[in-house]
Length: 254
Ligand SMILES: [Cu+2]
Image (cartoon, rainbow, N blue to C red):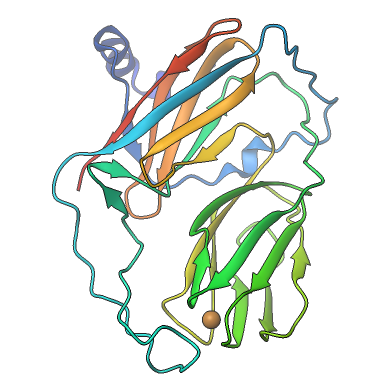
């Protein structure tokens, strides 16, 4: 059932014994996760469980040059820290954690509420986000600077639109699943965000303190994955019992 277990059965077996099955892989392309044409999945709230945890960063975080935004008077005058790796007290923020394998077959309806991306201080906020296929994606410009949003998609239509401070929000939707879809601003080359387009609601982005929570999961055995823009993906096996919250942490290293 789990593809990789055929590739590395001794490793998986050993990892299961040790209770530590984290493996590093490049950032995946989740086009194969598409199951939107199947019947919709209904989750029984009486038995649903959850997964919570923390993403730790062990070691010295890498240093990046400060971002000089002074070329545009609409951007901060002081140098700003890069956001490629955000570590606070040994916890890693901006990691997308998602259920990669084990969900019931079928389609999950996207929320009608939009996911919102703001441009603030000449950065994208949030840096990393998840959204479902078909869910509205609303882009704001809270700055006095002119921005331009360029969607560098591989599996979705690409677009490239400017947005002045006085412009209305831009609203888009994504048509296909796609992991770590980069957005960039052609005006400000340091601006970068990653959108993860999912076919189910079982994902979360780690907060400043590295924590994540995925709720309303049917009981089952899952492959849980954590994706970070520099370090790629790690996976772990998690069992969710009825009405229980499974605790699972990830560890990233430099
Ligand atoms: Cu910009």
